[in-house]
Image (cartoon, rainbow, N blue to C red):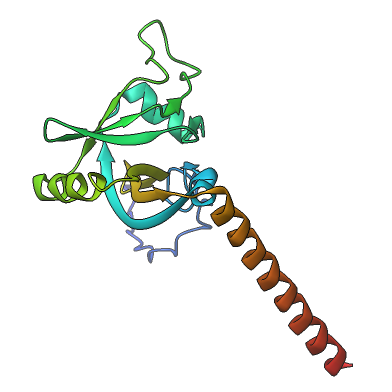
Length: 183
């Protein structure tokens, strides 16, 4: 006798526990800056900021993701209608081979022609220069924030430090009075 088979329809089950999302690198996801020039605000008055792309090699991008970029002594320059970034130190990629990049090579900034003209006119004023303030990722691309900056004199630096200290003391006094009132 032939066996009779019955087809049972199994209702779709709810998906099981989801895999935890792989934690993404905060630098690569754009949550944290890849490099920040802390000395820029101490040594310069930062007047106006611009965002520019940076023409990089593959090993340079990977090194920036690893956090090996340093903007300390770097500056921007406009030559022949093009913008360049000089003295940015990007350390060699750890898994790179003999074709690894030069760490302080001149890198081209990717800006529109109008932006380059605008930057050129602003930097031709005596005492003004282009200073990169930070490197970061936006949609997987490395961006550089450039600031038109004017150099500070020693008395400017002391004045800024005095103002910062006074603000800190005022905040501490306000917090202390709030804390005393709460008791």
